Image (cartoon, rainbow, N blue to C red):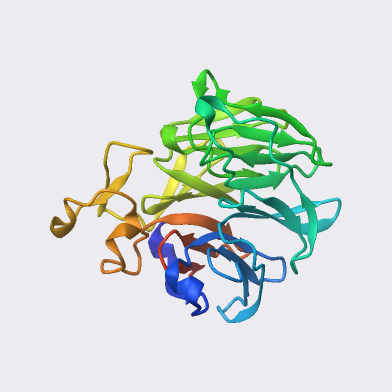
Amino acid sequence: MTTADYRWIEDWAKIPDTPSGRRNGRTHGIEVLPDGRVAVFHQAQPAVLIFSETGELLDRWGDRFVGAHGMTLTQVGGQLAFWLVDEFSCEVVKTTLCGRTLQRLPHPPKNLRNGGKYTPTWADQHPQTGDIWVGDGYGGSGVHRFDATGKHLQVLTEFDGLAVDSPHGLRVDPAGQIWLTDRANHRVLVLDAEGQVLKASTDACHSPCSFAFHDGHAYVAELYGAVRVLDGDLNAVATLGENPWLIPEPGWEQRPKWAWPEAQAEQGYPNCAGTDHVQPGKFISPHGIAVGPDGAVFVAEWTEGGRLIKLAKK
């Protein structure tokens, strides 16, 4: 499996041209619905966008999610729903596919290490236990577990003796295992339903952001310019759209800088360099990822104004 096995569709869909979209518009979460529609969670109003398979905007809702971040499609008790996470308001909410609120989680009872403020980034619900897992990726760096009613059960702050650092994305796979990105530690973790480590890897990914599953593989959005495909043993079996122009810089989460000469002095996030160097076939900052039943890969990038890419199987 290589990028050449796909047809790269640049700007497969575009976010609406709105004042808030022009100010920010970063596309953060993305999911493929059972009927083939694609949902996008982005930092503009309305925050939830529903597109057709060909990128036509069909619906939009959710005016309160200014900090739209994690989006997960879940099915518990036969009901399909979204778990949506707002990094600014710290709201973690379960909604119908049309936007009706079904459940809202309370804030955890206390902040975590170093006085870190609770700033959740992603959530998912276990289909068998009903437990809801929340990654506090931008605050106290803990993984919170709630029961199905929203009661806070526990918080995990280290795995295998190493403190978790930016548990940015998490997802329950079809087998009921919880996949977690420990991004600043360059780790991918797989947990059981009680939060015990089943597998861990620091070799497969350098900046894991979020997960999607298809045909026995995990597709990982790597913030610094790639999509990594892992097998069940956390071996990287393919890399899609890798960008050779991103190189790591020391600092928080190994911030990247652009490697081309005119940007050598730039440090910070990939989108700081604007869109001058955007080119089809190369990712800049994959953030959300989804895979359709036909194997098509959809990527939402963390860039101002949003960037939505589709890799269609040839």
